[in-house]
Amino acid sequence: MNTKEDQSSVSVSADSSNNAEVNIRRLSTLEEYEECVKLQKEIWGNDYKDCVPGSILKISQKIGGLVAGAFEGDRLLGFVYGLTGVFDGELAHWSHMLAVRKEARGKGLAKLLKLYQREFLLSMGVRIAFWTYDPLVARNANLNINGLGAGITEYVKDMYVDAGSDLHRGLGMDRFIVAWHLGDEMVAQIVSGKNLPRPDRYISSPVVNTAVDKDGSVFLVDSDLPYYPMLRIEIPLDIESIQASFFDLGSRWRTNTRRAFLRYMEGGYKVDAFYIEQHSRRCYYCLTRSRENN
Image 1 (cartoon, one colour):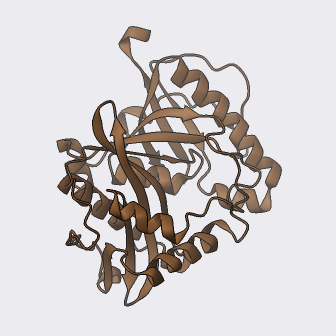
Image 2: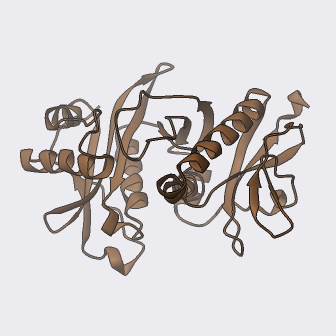
C-alpha cells in the first residue's frame, strides 16, 4: 500500500463549466488541515463534538487513508475523509466524512470528490468502500444510489451518539450503511452516466408509509405494513427544511420510515433504487423481496 503523502493526485474531470477552476487534490499542509477542521464546524456546528482534528487528518494520509479537498484557488470548498483498513481479509475503506460549503452546493462537487476517492482507492488496490448516510436526506440518496452506484446493505437505528450537530437535532442518528464496489463494471457505467438506474418498473408498486387525501396532500400512514413483491417507501424532498420549520413533523418522518425500513429489510427486502418523481417532486426508495423469502 502506498502511503506517501505527496503521492501524485488522480485527475477527475468536472462535468460543468461551474467547476472549471476547481481543483480536486489531497490536503498536504498544516494550514489546509486546520481549514478542514474549520469547515467541519461550519457544516456541523461549533458545538459538534466529533470533529476530526488536523493531527488525525494528517496521520490518516500517512497510513493509507484519504483527505481530499475541492479547492478554488486556495479556498477549500469541500472535502472527503476516510480510513483504510481490512474487512473480511481484504483491503477496505470507510469514508467517514463528506462536506461541501453551502454556497458551493449545486456544482456537483460532492460527486467529484467521491470520484477522486474512487480513483485513488483503486490505485491502491482497494476494491470496496463503506459509509453511512441519513435515509431521510433525498439529495444524498440520489447521489449515493443514482450518481455513484453504491448499494444499501443495512439500516441501523441510532448508528452514532448524537455529537451535538445542528443538522441532527430532533432526528436521531439512524443511518443506512452503503457498500461501493469500486471496480464493478456497473459502478463504472453509472459514474460515467452511461447506465443510469431507471425506476420504471417500480412506479406502479404500492407506497406503504404514506397516502394522499382528497385535496392531494401527502400524509404519513402508520397502519399495517403488508408484504408485496415490490414496494416503495416515501421520504420528503427536503427533510432539513421540515426539521427547521416543523420539528414534530420531522420526528414523525423518522419514526414512520424507521418502522418501514426495519420491517422490510429484516424481512428479506433490499433497496434496489431511489427516484424523485419529476412532476410532484415526491421521493421514493424502491424495495424488492428476494425469491427465497417469498
